Picture 1 (cartoon, rainbow, N blue to C red):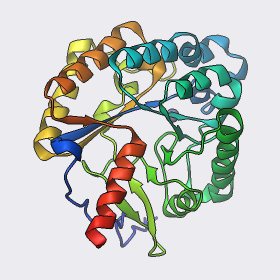
Picture 2: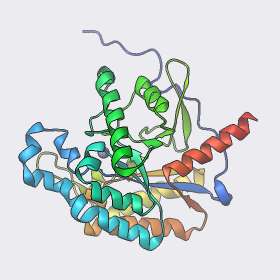
Picture 3: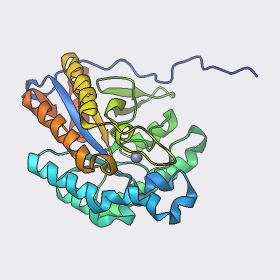
Picture 4: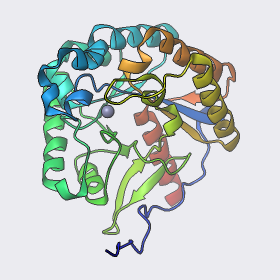
Amino acid sequence: MTVEYPTRPGNLADPAPEFPWPSGARCAVFPGFDVDAESAWLEYAPGNTDRMVTLSFGGYEVRAGVPKILEYLRAVEIKATFFIPGWVVDTHPKMCEAIVKDGHEVGHHGYTHKRPEPADFAADKEEIDRALDTLKRVLGVVPVGYRAPSGENYSELLGYLRDRGILYSSSFRDDIRPYRHKLRDGSKGPIELPINLSFDDWLYGLSQRFSPRPMFPKEHVLSIWNGEFDQTREWGGLVTMVMHPQVTGRPMRMGIMRDFLARVRSFGDVWIATGRELAEHYIAHEKAAAG
Ligand SMILES: [Zn+2]
């Protein structure tokens, strides 16, 4: 069988523009959390509905992970972005209200945490709309940011998200500075705040018998995170973190985030920002450049 390869690249966006970060900052760090709770486990196997121990990985977020992370962020006075599936908001409203009450940004993360697929456009649009309704109804939030559940996206869905008020996406892995998507129909898509997968805590700290991964000690993860950060700072880029309260909310792993962000702050020239702040900064420069 012959495989048909595409004749164009996946991403048609122009290279990321160079512009300064606010207040003379040398680089930016975007602390983002994906609050998947049990949805991460329900998504992969419908049979997990009644598997209480499997679901308890996600349940940790409600009982301990999110409260501990909020406590830490209050103490160090950092505002972060929490991408929350609509199902999680409907199922655990109190946990999500606490996030909003502390002044953090809430971003869109699908409804059931279904991974977007180009063949499922109709279902994916439903996921987007259902979660928008839930965020508004339960939390009074109209999100401007979207992180794709399980990290997949496509041109039509990016256009749909833009039309539904989404200013930025934070899922792509192809740059170290924000850029604006260019869609297949030639129109402008949302801004991308690209992620650095080295900052996805799931890879280092979540092991389960059906998806086993090696567990990494604090020193190893810090060594990777500090190394990625140091070079990104040299390049004047953006470090986008992808943390999950069921991983980073664990006792030892809280220490990784705490030590990493304390070191980041010690430089005195790093802008720690929410996705919304980063997107608004990008838009301001885009407007200025257009004259
Ligand atoms: Zn997720």
